[in-house]
Image (cartoon, rainbow, N blue to C red; front, side, top):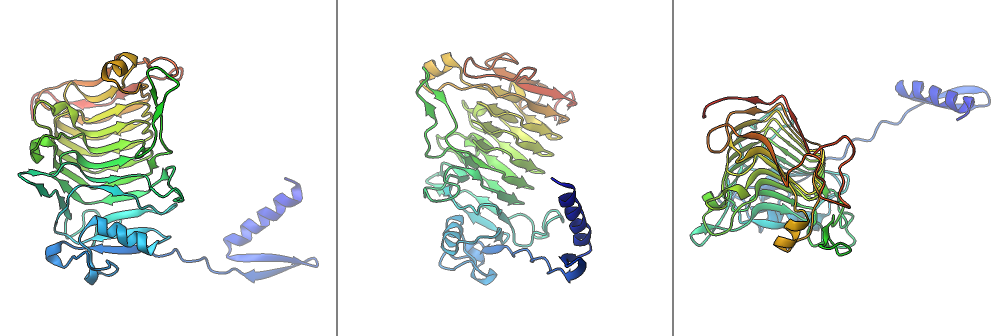
Length: 398
């Protein structure tokens, strides 16, 4: 950059700060009033209300007096309207009897799709009306099998997110309960090939760029897993992230996340798996989680679990790192995986494990802080699978 160009940019910067633009005409300086900045486009809003409080899927959801009653109908409205701005799904308080929905595929590139109470005001905490409740439906004598919500990759090959990217889903102050598999499962490898046959046994690889940059704030995940749902299917986690990175889970509660015997260890507060990295799990409460507080698997790196409150949660340890090495892949007839590394478990307040006593802070399977899993798996020099510190432990039960 030349001196003249630098001076021109410097002058423009000063005048821009004064709300003016400059024209250099025949050696004179003429000031032209700058045009006002364009106002940020308003969010496109879809309204929900329980069926007993005026919600109906025969409505269009475009005003509060024409609220829809289900998330499948919300998605249908969005697919028809095709908004290009942020989206807000404003949800009236009450109880929604909602069967598991594993077909959420609507995203707006570069914008959020938010799910929040109708009276939620950013920055003002819990809404005055409380949390809308999504409760699973019954299928016979047990609750229906599945997650409350499973976002997946779009099916349309022309969709900007067909190959993955930033899904930007934003969940705030909702309560989710009685789902057998768990709360939300972000599935960034849905309907994609995740097997590299050049290795024997085959190596699991990413099927897409993932479904990334999602937020969970002030959520309540309660009474999830087969202990609460009944039936023969067991659960995996309050939140399950599969090829889903750069998410933030904050100020949320994971209460009674439990499977019935013999599958108590299969469900976790969060299950961060298969190429899910740089996730932040901060300032949450975990209570009565029959598996691990957080379990990480297969190249899910640089995840931070910090400043959480943990009571009666965790089996052999609070944090668990796992992957399926060559022998595991042969024995279980699945693809081989690699270790995760640089997961952080710091500054958590720990009262007790699931059984009521203290347990190990962390555990790994297979063991070895620098065990990557063999070529082509690798852990960078100086790194290890998990780092811990600053956790406050209390003796006795609670």
